[in-house]
Image (cartoon, rainbow, N blue to C red; front, side, top):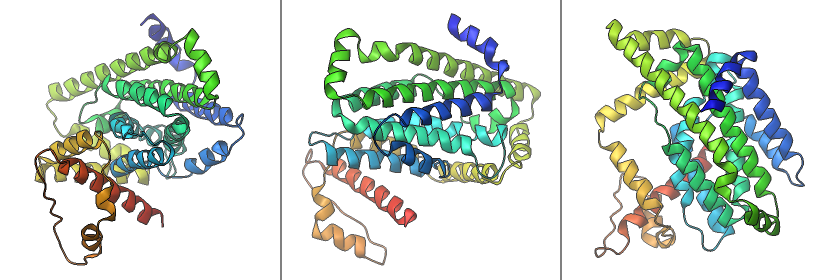
Length: 336
């Protein structure tokens, strides 16, 4: 924690957005060292808009699909990354507040970094397992208040802490991509001198500390709003802040719409957690080529897909695979 205290004192030396932009640039430069098209792909990903909540799920399924094509013993471990990916998605609006403008290069750069890291780490199955375990652990290390997206534009200190959190996360991504580009023999030799967890522990500890600082600061903001007795102050101040960019205004509408959907379907979060849990158990691909399933997909009128089977026959896992297939199909239709 001593290192974090020193780091907090140095935050003001450079603007948070400059520090973050520099870190993204350093990640991009590190990709140039490798004899592949990863640097070009990274630049292309930077031109895309930051993801929506649906696109986070779609990314995990794309990783699961690519992993299954590369490795015969693949299990859908990308599904366990939903928590940390959602955390990074929630941090995306930081660029809207710090930089402004319709095109948020900071948010796009952060998401491009995360996506490239996952794609590159797929080279070796054992290495991806370690990476996914690390990221899952990071995602569980801290939590965010439900009003976080509305609160952080009101506090410059919170924005600085968020930048530092993302900076450390990108440093982790950079380390992952450098190691993943090494040959299997080189990775094996390294494992004799140091373990995967010991290499990343210092950065992971820093990330956890920044996350705790963010949690504590947001808790203070929430308490302050409650004491003032102005329950709508957060939303009013947020509406003022999001006017600085069309992207932020759109995100605010999406947040309100999402809350309305949650009110209309209070059990939806439970459904999502069940799907995530069952998806981790494996992939049931037989149904995707089944004639009845294909007919159901081609039905132009409303129709229910009914799956029957004995207890323990894999019905839930199969339906989880169907949902995953529809997520990928939706992503492909959006891109086309």
